[in-house]
Image (cartoon, rainbow, N blue to C red; front, top):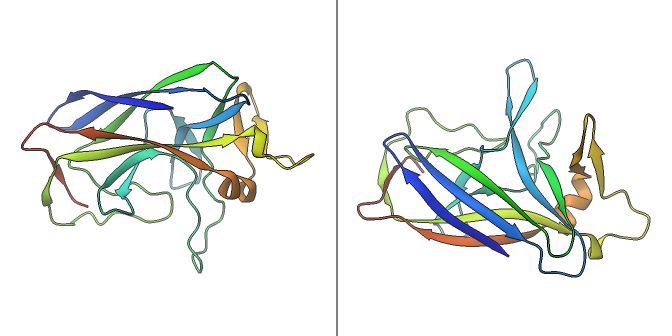
Length: 182
């Protein structure tokens, strides 16, 4: 279960708090940490970073999850966010800081710096990707601890895409909404 709430809306950012509670009988792995990637390829993790884009319903989607590399697109390495493990009954809390105006944040597509402003956005959907260990194939290395931090995990790209589920939480913004370039 995902609970999300808007903490602040300023001229420069929306701050969203979220909490995931594992109400299942199996361990859940929750995508919680994205990366900034330097031109050199070096990555630095940022637990407040979130992807921003259009959802399937045309609304604005803000979240942390595994995104597939589009067919025909060549990338050196797929971006695989870090996960945390939740035993049954455990929860994890985090925060997302989303810059304004809302602008595409995607691991493989660059936002146009001169995209025109669109109509103000009054609704967001917060999305977190999760992997349920009950669905892991026997003996498969679906997740493994990250180097240097035993509390964080990385998923196998293929298994991650195949097994990922989404927890969504809708949020309403007060009128007149927030500026967007989506």
